[in-house]
Length: 236
Image: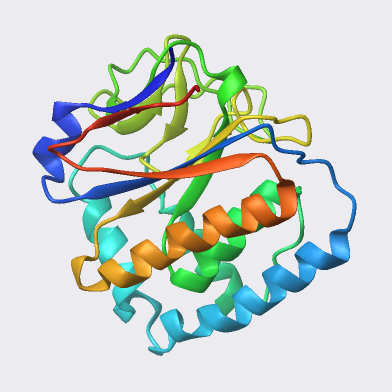
């Protein structure tokens, strides 16, 4: 049975972090109504303005938190957290467009709550999904590229038996496991480091679960992983 496991080398760097996991089964992720999801994204982009109110982009707490986090491990030059990438687009008035329902849902939650969120197709994961330091030999090809870009040794990655799934914790994901319309079972993760925002973290997970269950049907459950509870099953 496949699991998601957060390894000790991650906790050594982020001992008080939490990883919110939403596991969805038997969903229908086909595109039926793009207008519905564009409206969801537009509302979330408006809400996200609160996280970039400081004139200097780096002075905003969400941005500063993740910049500091990225200084704790080896990263590719210029790599930034997924939430920074989304908020940068909002700041530049670059509209975030629909991709597919599940991706739109997690992007909207990410924007609304100012937290990184991503997801993978469970059927494409080989063996367990680990959050750990990379060895540096893991295969990785990202969207829009045909070239392998191996992670650095010591870089924090999600990976499985085949290779890296997401580089630099939440920077960029592999095309191999990314969510498409054909996804039936999915795992979504919110990495949580801002400990004065515990209620927001819990609300983000709850809203993610509700949006998936309401719009994509199937079953959906929440698990919160920490140093004392570092793994959970991905399959029923």
